[in-house]
Amino acid sequence: QVQLVESGGGLVQAGGSLTLSCAVSGTSSSLDDIGWYRQIEGKSRDLIARISILGSPIYEESVRGRFAIFTDNDKNTVNLQMDKLRLEDTGVYYCNRPSGRIHSWGQGTKVTVYS
Image 1 (cartoon, rainbow, N blue to C red):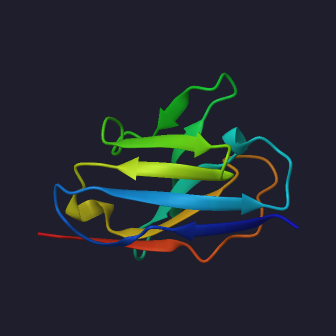
Image 2 (cartoon, one colour):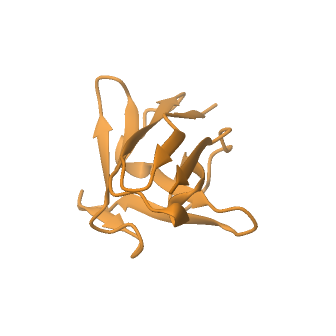
């Protein structure tokens, strides 16, 4: 069974940076098949970053230019570098397949941005 474990969240001042990590186990599928979602309190869980079939990153408009998704094949992780964080980036971040049959969700990692 595929297991996704998110980590790296925390409390950060607006304008700061965090790097989230998604440890993937139980599958031999490419790490490119895992994207990052964000769930802001009271709202739906939205896909914000993924890697296209051609290998290029695709971002939701609000994070484009500030976030970067990248994989580490040695550690079997999919990571999200988040720079220039804003108050509105506060939420719980999850990783999972961006389309098709979704894996079981991990517990997510909480990011809180303060002014």
